[in-house]
Length: 181
Image (cartoon, rainbow, N blue to C red; front, side, top):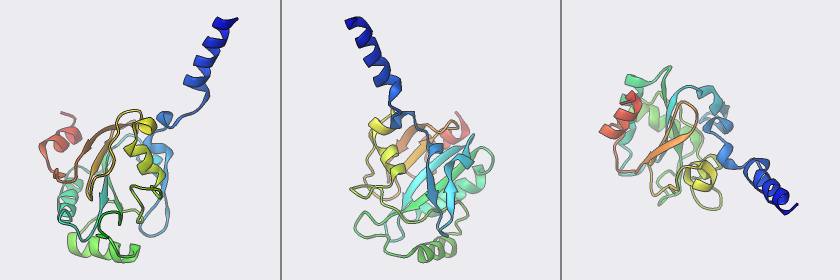
């Protein structure tokens, strides 16, 4: 009888509670910069680079490189999703409309930009809770250290890697990942 209880407890702990580890990137819904719902499941089958952004940061010029790789690789196999946030030294103080204007007029951004969110702390967005916690994503702990941290999501919606804020979007490592090398 004891063996049966142990086996049942194991089965329940492993399969009974649907944990975040069982979630994928595609299980989340967000809001775009225009206030419209954006279902991340629409990106199924694509590699996705997720980046938290800010307009008044030393890393802000990375918007240009993000746009360059989006123009080169974006489409059926690759996407970029930007999440403006104001979690580091108030470097994204603008409204969603102001952020959109800045991204398009200054950097010609055409990749999807979402509504401003929080990427850390008590108000962390559920997507970023999943991205940053091994308990949630089953892969790694990767708390956001600064603006322009990049998360690499594979075609199956699983987190596969993270690039720190100072690593450029055009780094050899990121390009090799996009190209599948």
